[in-house]
Image 1 (tube, one colour):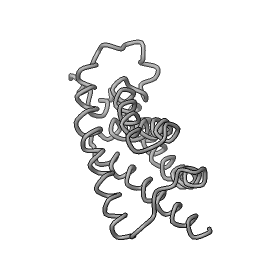
Image 2 (cartoon, one colour):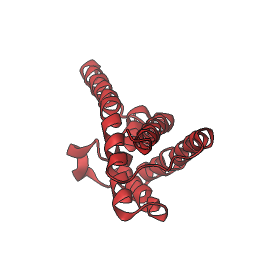
Image 3 (cartoon, one colour):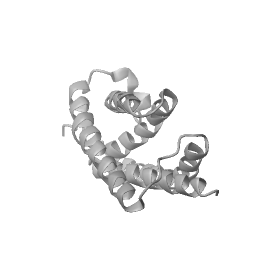
Image 4 (cartoon, one colour):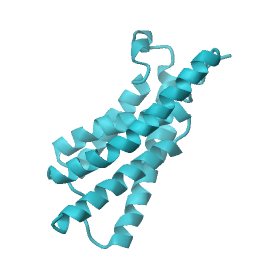
Length: 166
């Protein structure tokens, strides 16, 4: 059975299936636990989201988060995975950090320079790797969009709280 490089890895047997399920569960829980303190730290270290009219802000956060993930994790990352398939065998030990995820995340971070200072855009890179890993574990773009939206909503909440003297 040929593996689709843009989707989740195919597994050879029951032991691998169980190990993969445990690894995926650990990944999702790590994201859920790490996102709130990371979002607060980002907002508190001088890179908050602008807080204005809540309804408009939340609608734009939803629109941008989902749109970015459709483009980057829905189209670009799977295309790069197909293009890079079999070309980087030395990266097998780092299977969680695939060339497609690295390239997609580098471009994702670079394109944040148009609206963010260099340090903030650079900080987008590791977060983007997490979104890319979500795409690779699930084989779909929407889990990455859900993580992106979750993080941006937490960042907005932290920014709102800090702006009110929290």
